[in-house]
Image (cartoon, rainbow, N blue to C red; front, side, top):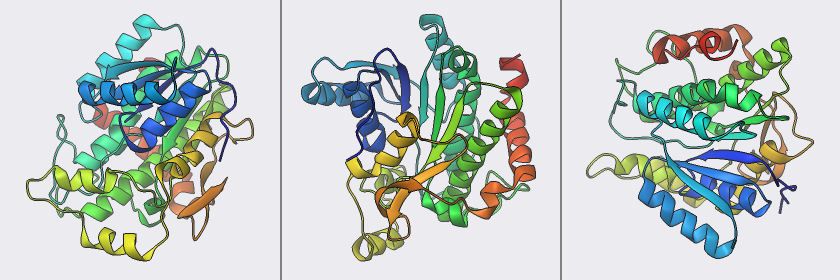
Length: 308
């Protein structure tokens, strides 16, 4: 079991902290001494998760704040509220996401739900919080990708799946985009001489509610047959283990800037954390720069406007 180093005095924001890997990350960061902002879409669920964590970790410093990553106005409100209350942010953990809604759904701003919630929302949140992050002495931004990024493709002609929606491919594209965002942020940080580590992680095949949450968005929706079959055939792991690559990326002194961490056994599905090879598409720097520019245009949140 990975032991999180002492985080006393640090402030962390964890998105999707009411369940799954986000809740586990919030708990273990708080247990190591960090103040943790549990950034959640539904405050009641966040407060329930906070109470559960406090039952296990009495004295944990936890605050619940609302942010809806499928709503750019909510993201702006969250970022402005945090900046008004805090002098800096040591750790941003982009963890929240949605998986495989069987029908094409749209965010509040009209983006395809998976591309919007999993990539454009975290992108906008990251850029809006960058001034606060860069004010910290040794900040990190950690982005949760997925093993499915390995077969993801970017369709720049239809990033929002307006022509022919395919749930699995849309999810894979969003997670490839997350990995490329982390890489591009690492490059920007290096080029500008920022004391910032941008690191990505994936949880392997971990038991969370992510696989069923997407189906639940559609009345009568069910978990895709493929996932039900794979869950029976392939090795899986519990949330505590599946969160470890994320925690390693977020806290280990050995976590490398611009790197990607995931489980080490059974083709990256389970096991202790290791440095993971990135798919070739994720290492395409021209595409990463193009994706970044597309995200700025779609969200209206530009790096130049946020960070001098």
